[in-house]
Image (cartoon, rainbow, N blue to C red; front, side):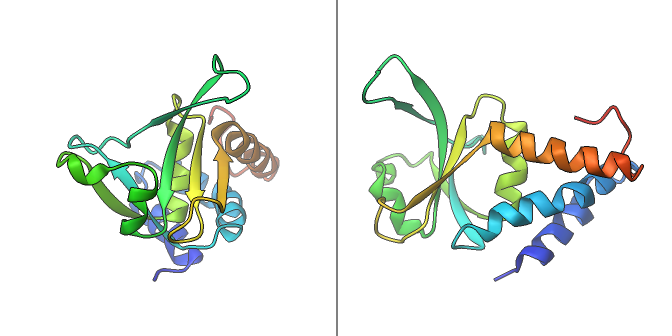
Length: 158
């Protein structure tokens, strides 16, 4: 299993070599690592459709059904998909293993997604951690502000 530092290095190495993106990755790495350290697994499974898009689940507020949010579930094992839905009946859905830092990095780009719900205990949905995109964006902005103060990131980023 790849540790968090190695996962971040992989993100940096795979970033577009445009002179800017790798620097941004280095700048936001502490945010991704800090959140990933609160989670129990280095890798989760994400449900994707045949076009490789992440499958969104719409959740309604029990007290106020008019309030809805789009979430993505991250499963600790392949078997845990059955806790949420019967994906075995849909051959077009794939469970794809992904490193936790890569999931968090992708979340920032998914504007229609409210959060990712990480299921922490295999075989149970009672222990979950929800990472809200808005909170992740806020933490990244703070980190970029610090980096900008150190003059490492151009001001027109994010």
